[in-house]
Image 1 (tube, rainbow, N blue to C red):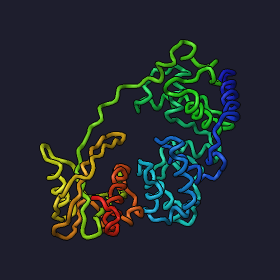
Image 2 (cartoon, rainbow, N blue to C red):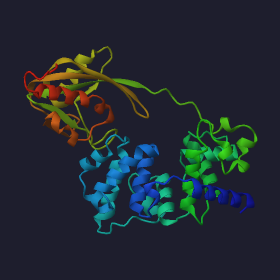
Image 3 (cartoon, helix red, strand yellow):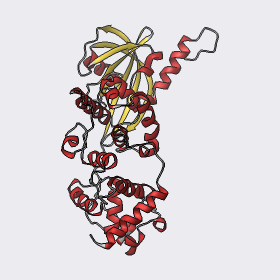
Image 4 (tube, rainbow, N blue to C red):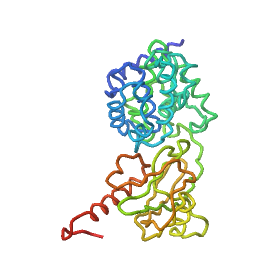
Length: 370
């Protein structure tokens, strides 16, 4: 191994020892806790993940506790963090590992990589950090650092480039301290070698960086232009029947799988939102409703899709719930709504439902509002 790479490793690890953030998953070698942290940190910033991590482990502190937990409980703990397939897969994997009575998290690549939701990144991160296995991680931070260090021309956001970045990460990895080295490289990308305005003068690797030496830091990593994100219009109905409203549960697979929501669906071309709301409720749950008034209009963005929700207050007219798509339903009081896990977009108008319910239940003469 060249002296340049050995020196790079020493400088990076020394920088990490001094500058790393003190994070709870760095204070443990428990593979379960490290695994939970890495799943949460996929496509999520550290400060966002922290409170979820603490709350999740307070309630589900071991792999066995997770395995026997109801999926609804797991999703409620995950509520608002997004990318819910991560939580569903983690729950499934815990069940697989405990089903035979072992309950041990594998420390070998093939066995761990075969679990639901465990891709190359998760496998490399957990195995290197928890078990000192020499597997190099490749995430967005690592790609950015490597692209600038080596002036890698391959677009960082193309799947075909992954092998190039993986080969570079493998070449630089310090096999004696793989967990620390992986975390150091990611930490450098998060704190110093940032996407915009990188702090090159504070970088431990400035002397090794080809892009800095050539005045080209701003040109790396290279990216191909993303496709335009489509937008869908969706009508949603808050269907009231007495003092209760109808919620439905999505099938456990796919986007937002296993979460609760209010019935509704996509507008057809040229269709008015009010008409779409009544039609979708009839098709989805077999109820006839009166669409009384609009409640809110919400815009929300997913990684691959933008939606505009038209939310209406509806009154039950006739029918009996028969599900076409959802797998479960409940008629609940608004006061009970916090027991159920909802998509983030729903939380944009749930406070309004709580306000309306509180106003409706207030004694006469206490300033009730419509």
